[in-house]
Length: 84
Length: 326
Image (cartoon, rainbow over all chains, first blue to last red; front, side, top):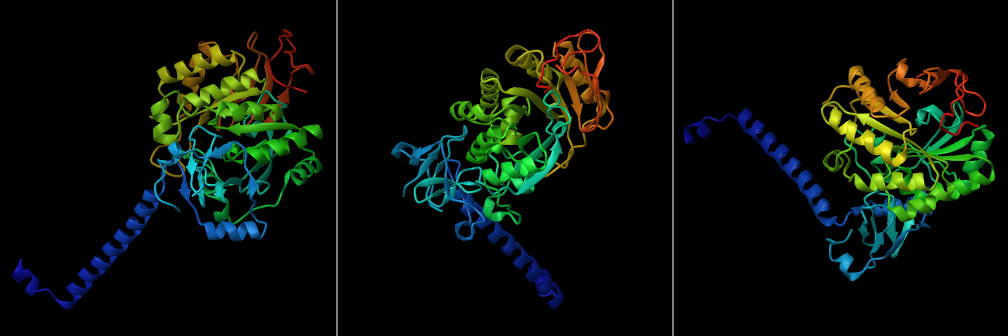
């Protein structure tokens, strides 16, 4: 093994570096997704609130109060994981 | 933190401030649940009634069809996923069409009805209700094209403005609903019964996906349920699957599978069983269940001949054909 490493050429090292960077990028991407999924629970989703607020202010979306909801009880909020 | 619990669909999402429900468009802002796509559709088209599909409801009429972003189901084979699996803030195209504007536009286009369709209109419930009330005042009908995953109480209230609905039964199997649609079967069946009780004209669609829900025993069980709970005159549409979204690994449904399902349903006693998404199939036309007279001939979404009498009877034997014809 050590013998093989000694024989690595700069070209091989660059390739291994590229593989490592790609692996790291994929790991970070998956980690971000998992963190977001970890925040969500009880059926809710994290959204791009800044974008939503901007679109509501510009009139492109609305903040019309919905029907069929109630303020969550203490029992119901137990299932909530994290905040957006 | 002032969280809210949405009571609209069986998910009962508990939503913290700044978050949305599973549907992506019902958002908790300042402790109040907001319908963010109210009056803001992202799809507007004029379709023939047959495209919904509704074959026994004002045949050939033009329907003003709208949808906003969002959906409370997440079907792996969704055909409108660019619309349904996104929130309002993610859409490039949003039209400003509050209920009065919508109804005015539909009337100007000479449409007989407004269809709430494409994504699942359950999630833009308030927009449907307010537009539906206005449409009725203007003499137009309201058509709901849905997967029917809604709680009974809000549905019963909504039925007050609905005239017809095409409801998907994705499969007669709860496991299928959980795996493929991210939902459950029973609320859909409850919803269908509620619609029947409230007098909404119902047609049912069942998309047959090869190997997943094309088992004849499952189809038989579904057909018997429809016959017993909704009535033998309830039109059933077996629709052909096309590979889409996250289900591109399966082929389109073979025509013989659709034929077998249709025969099974007719043998079980359903009188009007159709085959959809197959151009030129004889199962796209309506026949008299008594004497086999061709009543309405169709090629795709287009009517080639209509032999029904003005009051919806077979011209040969005078049998009354269930539906809303005028």
